[in-house]
Length: 199
Length: 199
Image 1: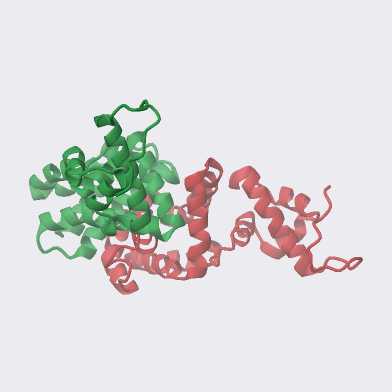
Image 2: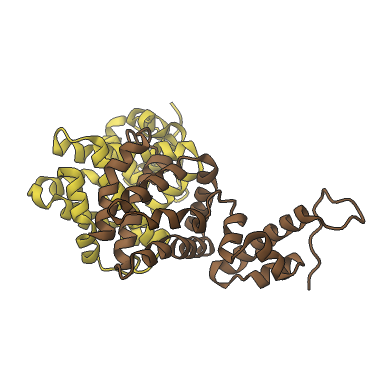
């Protein structure tokens, strides 16, 4: 077992408090995900790296996916936000998905870490693997599971429509899409997302 | 006037040959686009930087856009490839656009410099401006011009669908979209592109 890293703000001799252990777990999770990728990383390995019991990791964060969300500082927990969107009337599923997607990307606190993840995916295999596993599992996997026997290619085509919109809006910043209202974007692409998913 | 850079392979006293001047113009163009962005860069400025006459830049490359394509080492000249795609039967426009887009992105020689441009757009304002002006002008501007009075937001929604597909296919490399055939992708998104453009 490795020794837990001692955060700077802890004085000598003082035991690690909850905040310190939480910080240590997040730091360990970042290191573990960066070194092994999402799929190979484990709560057990993160706990070992942080010098705490795996039960404490579960206590603070829940599942591995939620540790990932915390480690990446994503202010969006798919396990929390997606189920309500997926549970409503299927006839408006595209609309609810596009509204959620566009509105969270309009929040700088979500956008910055997600763009960081995308940048790392563009510069190295490790980053691409992490993004792929997160998007494929936590996001698209949930959508596919909620829809039953949908063709995964159709789920990805729907995702592509939404991903392309935020890329042109927030990275390329092309007008008029960069300044369009959220409702204009919903009107523009919700029918496409609906058609891809439930055709 | 600045002195033209002397390429290493030119011996002392030998006059610059066509290859040397071409190389000097490309180097000057890269510097000019990087320093000023696409819109503010000019053939005159590039010629000055390369120590040649502007007419020589036009002679070797044609327009500023074509100098840009050469400087970015894009093995795709929109001025050459887009007009034929835009000129055919409007009922199959979506299909032709998606087929062109997907097939050029499947070429590593096109993908590498384009991903480089996208990376630079994600890391700095200068790169974003360059990509925005190139995509907006050379690509989407041509599509919009060919279609007459189409809503630019609809052209961008069509572009978003295609951009999202290549991002999931070549950056995130999500399966099954990463391994899908070009024809599967055409079948999947051409109707959407068609609908956005000619709804």
